[in-house]
Image (tube, rainbow, N blue to C red):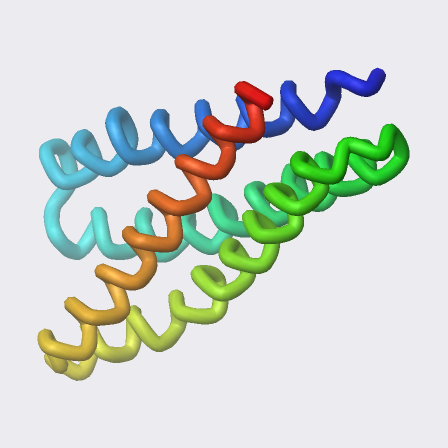
Length: 127
């Protein structure tokens, strides 16, 4: 049971890699811009909420088994995922309004946050 945080770090890592390497590229390749926009606006909020839930579960188990490094990593991942979740409506609105500069900044922030979560999850799985 004390290895559950490691399993959850691995699940988050797998989710991010799958989303980034499989889902997103194929959405843009196979769907029209209108369809891909609708699909991504549906999937990304869920993506970040799943990371929040997995991180909070990892945090709970890490605290129960006094695994402080994993607890910290899970806490940071949950917090960053919530930030990314909050950015989604602003990112969508900037795209809808044609504000490309704002969209690019918000999208970049989301990508950076996701990359940090990925790196933290890999680190957490190795600790």
